[in-house]
Amino acid sequence: MSEYFPQHIIEKYSNHSHADIIECYENAAMDMLVGETYMFIWSSKVVHRDTMINNTTVHYSGQIASNTNDELFNELINEEIKGYFFLKSSHEYLCYRIISCTLISPRGKRGVPPKYELKIARMEPNTIVRSLYPDYYDNIYLHPSARIKLRSMADHGFIPHSFGNELSNGVFTGFEIINLSE
Image (tube, rainbow, N blue to C red; front, top):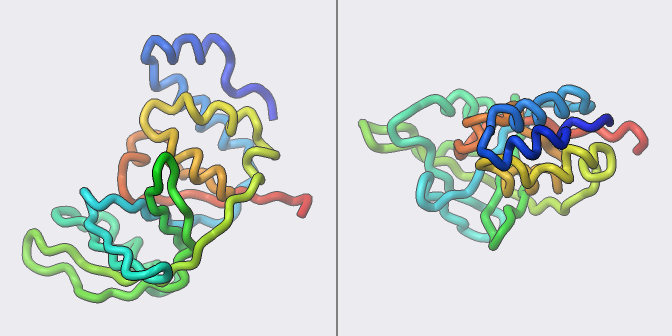
């Protein structure tokens, strides 16, 4: 992998030019060997009011006013897409594979979001992104708003579909990085 984060961009970033640095991430990702698309759910008690029932079950409330992710959750329920749940812990997110997703209660009247039960299993970190794409991994800290999410994803072998504003959402899609040497 060549240098996707040239020094002049890094220096420009320090002057708050975010568009150029996001383009660096997108250019680096284009050269990565990616697998299938996955759904990523980020734990946020403030936004989604998720509840950890035990170490294998989460009750997750969907979006209140918007139904933009309802179809993605339907795909997860029907096992048309695989998913991962990231739970905030100190300065990182712990990653859990979603084994199954069940709709507990559908979207109700205005202001009543759907509620899902996620069966999860803890995933251990790996070094695939760090080993195969060190320039990307070493420059994650430059992202203007999602460096902790990007680091947590990379530590488990994932990258997002997009590096822009979508990363501020609680649900978005991304890819698994493939290591052909394994």
